[in-house]
Image (tube, rainbow, N blue to C red; front, side, top):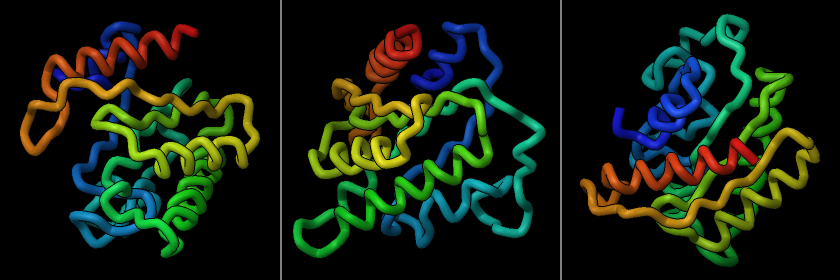
Length: 168
């Protein structure tokens, strides 16, 4: 209840469903040996067996906040930047198939901005060419919580940025 996601939902008095992973990336395994696009379809990240029924909950807005963990694996000239963009693009295509009418906000940067990740996200959003998919670059927030994660103050700041973006 102290996260930017919860605070944003609370602000709009909206219904929400959350899928939250720590240390997981879009393109290359980081802390765990799998990536978000491989597991977001399940009820639990620990299993591929039980698929989520996307018809049970149809959101108006989907917010994804990915890329921070990928930044630790991105290196110039090794193909990882293109791999990130390609996997992010494919993830967006898959999300659009699941949520045909939802606005999708691709947020990134609360914990700092790695320029190649931001560029990859923006290029993936452009490639999808969907008027209801947006890129939101957060202004980095206070990250004095455990392992450099956003603090309570940082989450409030992140929520305020997301709220403002949604209102526009």
